[in-house]
Length: 568
Image (cartoon, rainbow, N blue to C red; front, side, top):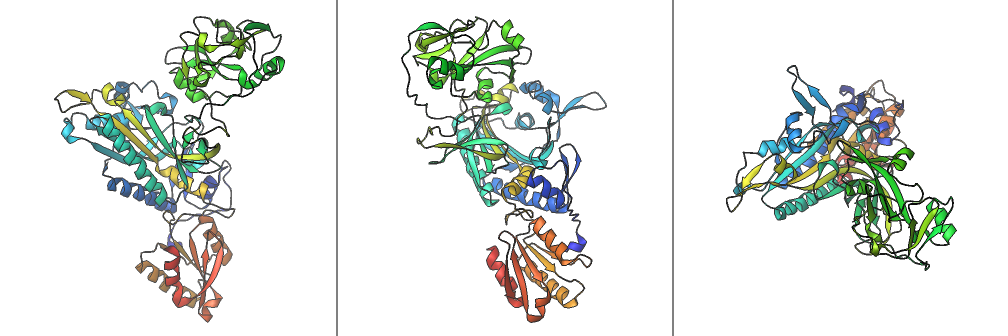
């Protein structure tokens, strides 16, 4: 391809709303342009990269035995009503009506549609397992679309769904997809981690996320410095904390006037915060109601809201107002585990179970309880509620846990029968009995990967594409395209590289100055540049490594062999 024949509208102007390098550079380099909030067009260079990533994803999935299909982007609302998700997806699911007043949705994901595809078409265990996937457009009506391709409303996604006769086989496929995803992200040249995750609105009993490590990532992930353990902060767990320095306290109600914070309580009673119990009051939102709930964690821990939301099976948690707290019969600053109003739902963190000699509120203003023994508490619900902190110990090896940032680019789920049972999608098992399919589901953000590559690979001048994702591997830069010798050699080199199937672009622009061409080369981020200039008369050209910005003089007859060596 020649620059003069290609639509590459580069610009020096910074997009006003772009804060991340990927958003800035992809717009400036003419890969994408915004046509609405969270909606982008892909221009020629962007489309090339998109297809390269798509092809890598497809080739590895096909190699793993998956079957590609393509579902409709628009799906009837009835399918979502069958699964029960029509009312649970919230405002992110865009609903539309056709001229006959029929209700449809722009698909944010396709569990229901894929179950409908398989239902009554796969009827026997003999036809299982099967893994179907598509790479198709999705739409989620994000409330705050931002960060370019990282949080858009319309995006290209690979979503796959496997169907099995039992859980054991589903777990086998789940592990196969985990290994397949690792191959995909490795081939793309990415530094990534596989982490335990929360299943969220998709559901299921177990899931893993794939995160590209980048400082600009929205997700906080917890990783071990000594082993491969990793988890999203929403799902991370740890070895139980070792609480040291507990002071013996008599079991009694103690006057603590105007002492409402954990810090003040610990100071007033001369104990460490770890000996106290913190009460976090929230309002749980359900489909048709809301109610105040209380979560109890150790005083020096923090509540992880996704864990807390799951613990009470809520759609979400919101802050409880002062009136909400009073109406529930609670006394802010003095809420404790004993003598709570009967109507109040409460959950205690697992690590506090059976602990004694603790301090908590007495549910009476200006009083706290000391010497609290949780073994005396009956009918209490315990769950994992805390946010793992940097410095906590790994549950797998005891190593130190640290926080880092990641961009989620893939997520795989063990669904079980959640959708097949709800939609009456059954098969005949080995005993001739009808059973719902056991399912797994597997997603990759294909268009999001474009931005993820750049967030991990860029410098102050522009993008640094990995070899598998670069729109062109080599940019032949003719210093003066009006010089017939330079242009003639450039075209000869271009033809020579093409014979070796090396994706090459020839910058033959006559009206563009050398400095402008080099600026585009650096901004776009082609892995290698070949500069053909005045030294050509001496039989010399320069090869530029974009990643290191090093220039190497090479004899013109050795350019192809040198580039082949570098690329390999």
